[in-house]
Amino acid sequence: MLLDYAFIASIAVLVFGSLALRLTSSRRATFAFSSTMLALILALALMLLPLGGSATYMGVLSFNPFSLFFAVLFTAGIMLVNALAYARSRDYGNFAALAALALSGMYLVAFANSLVSVFIGLELMSLPSVFVVLLSKRDSMEATVKLFIMAALSVAVLSLAIVLVYGAAGTLSLQRANAGALMGFAFVLFVAALGFEASVFPFNVLLPDVYQGSGAYATAMLGGVNKKVGFAALLQVLILLFITSRADFMVVAVLAVAAMFYGNLVALLQTDLKRLLAYSSISQAGYILIGISVANQAGISGSLVQIFAHTFLFIGAMSIVAWLESRGRSGIDDTLGLYKDNRFMAIALSVFLLSMVGLPFTTGFVGKFLIFLSAVNSGLAILAILGIVNSVISVFYYAKVLTSVYTAKAGGYRVGVDAPTLAVVGACLALTVFLGVYPQPLVHIAGSASSYLFTAGV
Image (cartoon, rainbow, N blue to C red):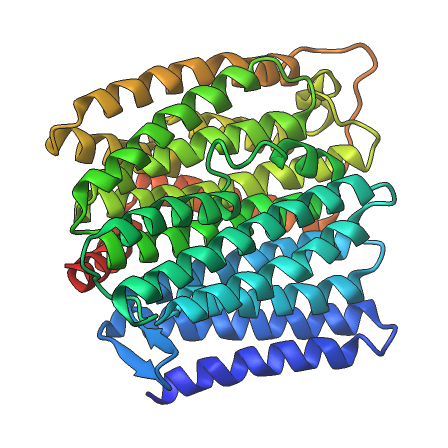
């Protein structure tokens, strides 16, 4: 219990401290404070993870294996994006304050004990994120407006869904509700509303434009962390409220197939790295949805592993894109000769992309393997087959990038990388390879989180 209160107090210190430091002009002091507090919060979350159990505070927050899994993920993700922003942001002080506010909203979603907590948490995350995009680039107004539109649509639909649940169940708690016409309609609305947050097709048509029009560190935050908050909310709502309505989960299976094919096929046509990674993340959302549609502990566990894997794959890849953009290179053709420019960055990008395909001995392979296996064992082998087909399709557009990276160009010369970017890429690469070769800790933590969620739901 003492650790729980220490965790909550550390979040408060991070938020108010970041806002107070905004009044100063010292980037270094702000970065040192933010990094220290994020490291402390991450350490506390990691200490709480092995304890297991469940504790509820004020009827609003629930400390459990599922919430702590996402607390670790969100904190680690924001730590990496924070370092990237320190190296790339023109206004790091504002970013640090906005990121701290957004992170507090992410925690509220992860630790939610009611639909009210989910609603407030998503709004507390979305609004600061809009301003992060606005400040990330001089010509980011279009991306900002499109992100705001998506956030506004999400909150409007989510509000209606919550009202319907209250009308049908008489409570806003995240607990199993009896099936009925109102709950069936609410299910569709929740999928749509949280689909905007989690980049689920077809609710993400503006996503590639937002990613392309934002600064690379803002894109890393949106795709690497924010979208995983959407999945945290989606998992809690669907499993805790609707797990007994198995027929509803066939809607999720259809969306999974549509997302995989849409993301991968459109990615084949892209020439811009950010847009390619945007469509790639849409297809990755499809793989995650396969695990959710299975609606059992094994499927949820596989989805959690894939969520974890993609967080660091996306942030790592986007860190390299940020480095390339700082040199005026943003297209796939601009990666020509990257291996001669900087071998470490070329190898790291290769590992990230191949892991997204599902290369063995990487986290991307572990996540996909668990998801497809759960689908086969649940009698949904067709989903696994379609997932494998889409993984093969993705090889073609990733191969375009890798071919360019390892194609020599005349006059290639060694190019250095700044320390923050190098640290972020190195951390993401280490997690991808280490947990790919030795996935037991990640699988165990994901299994505990899914076990709690599934047990609570049924």
